[in-house]
Amino acid sequence: MVTASPPGSGPDELLCSAKGCRAAAVWALRWNNPKIHTPDRRKIWLACDEHRESLSAFLGRRDFLKDVVPVEDRDA
Image (cartoon, rainbow, N blue to C red):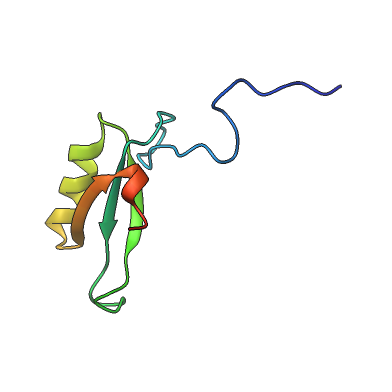
C-alpha cells in the first residue's frame, strides 16, 4: 500500500538541528572549528526560532560560531 506524505514532510524539508526538534528551520548557523577546519570552511547547523539562541550560544562558547543568516541565504 502506498501512502502520500503530508505536505511539508518531504526529504527536502529543512529541519532544526536541535536534538528532537522537528520544526522547520528558519536560520542557518554557520560555523567552523579552527582546530580542524581551514578558516574559509563553513559547517551549517539549522535552527528554528525557538532554538536559534541556544544553538548559537553553544557554538559561541567554543568560538566556533561565525554568523547567523536566514536559512535561504545559507549558501551565500
